[in-house]
Image (cartoon, rainbow, N blue to C red; front, side, top):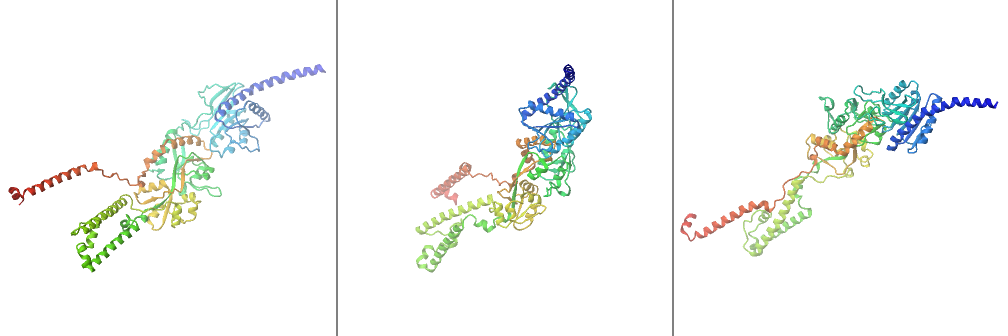
Length: 606
């Protein structure tokens, strides 16, 4: 009996040991390959590693579980998560390893549903162990493109030693949005052979879009974007962001079509019930790939769309008319002196007039002193006129000299201050803050999109507001206390387009910052590529160049006068001419003196 048992065990070992050896040899290659890719890719980028496994065949599922266990024993350099059914994962699924035996098993995992809210492109390494691997591979790649999973590698066993790496390139010279599997690499015994000329585990598929078409949700929003109807291609897009679009399209080599949001909804609104409108709805429904045009970054929009990095900042400002703050003619005349100065001058002239009246009534006492100097002569002299009748008394002449000096000082101060006002500004200081506008009972004029943006501000809630089609046109043509609230660039463009220099005043107190960005469908395959380009655009200063090509900010700059104060060196010619004239006058004076003694000179002057 014991001999029979021993013989039976020997036969069993002969049957089982080759199976175990073959199993280890067959899957050791897969395990080594996964370890290699994980070590070289995940470790360099410090990404979280997520394992998922599913199979229709129970034997395959058992094998996958054993493979995951063996791989985990080799990985000690990354944060690892195990995706299990009915268990919610806290960490991000940045780098995902999936082990499946069919498309149904892959679809049951449904990775797209777990990352649909992501604003970046995660990575997938899928090991497919299936009998009809080609058909299953096609279905998996179609699923990936449908759900914007672009960084994907599917591993298929060619033999126990060779693993084939497949992916798809959606933009090729022959076809756009193509999901045909492409063999890009082979691993032999866990080491890449690089027989297909690539050293990248996940090749860049958006380096060149091969002229394929992208759809954008666009509308006219000058100066950022204007759509010229009689042009074609990228030439029909002009403006600050229109120029940016051309540069990006040239870099990535894509063509662009556009959809205009219906009913003039433009950017659209996110309603409390979660529904959307305008460009936001087109993006959310994936009818458009991207949208931009003074599109402000906000947390509410970022929940339904993926936003690129903000590449331009402007401000929402308050604008008032300058005309209500313009000095009247009377105010201009009295501007140089303060009220106390004017009162002092009037009191001084009152004393002079009173003294003159006393001189008339007491002619015998004061008359001889002032009889030849009238009040009108004093006023004329004060304003710079000549003195017709000079008094003979030394005391009166001394007092008159003091009067002339006093009048010269007052007159010079008045003229210089008045000249400064006329040269620089004829307007009073307008309000500086929103709070001052509210205190002055101003009504705010703005469009509805700006209102939804700033409605939570305390100053706006305390004031009245109206929504005309053009806020600046409204406050210009309607009398009353109105203040427009709108982005600063729109104000500058309006002033530049309609030549409204010196018409509006922008308050120095800014309402709120406005960060322009570009929006994509949630989890869009374009987001990472465009985000990198737009970061470069924002940091390189290119957006400022395009801004200067479309906008002239000088309309709000203070008027500059190049006339510098004259220096003595500038007056040298006048001094020279004056000296020559003095010399000529002196010579003439000498000749007149000589003419009294020289007869022929006397006859000459006669």
